[in-house]
Length: 92
Image 1 (cartoon, rainbow, N blue to C red):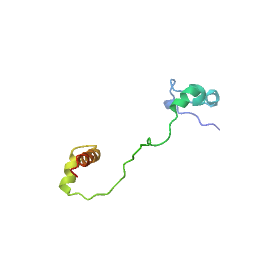
Image 2 (cartoon, rainbow, N blue to C red; image 1 turned 90 degrees about the vertical axis):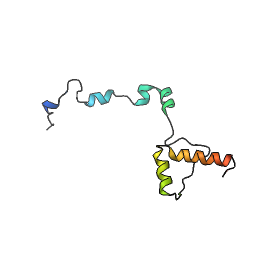
Image 3 (cartoon, one colour; image 1 turned 120 degrees about the vertical axis):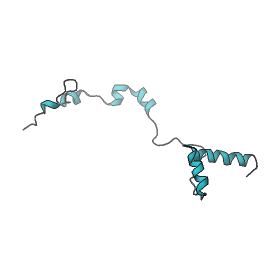
Image 4 (cartoon, rainbow, N blue to C red; image 1 turned 60 degrees about the vertical axis):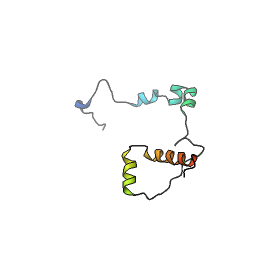
């Protein structure tokens, strides 16, 4: 025996999807076209970079680490940039 819908949950603007609806449904490539699907296709994950950064473990004094973290998001990138600049200047 089919389950009867709750009349309090019936929404005329959003009717229940039936078998006829799904019979008329199209896949994304049929609805949007192959040209769009080629543009939308991408490789999973992050884009590859020429020189990926390597994760390291380093021990820092708590006051140094607290200061760096207090500068906000991106502090590790700024530390990397500062070290690279010191190396380029021959100071490290």
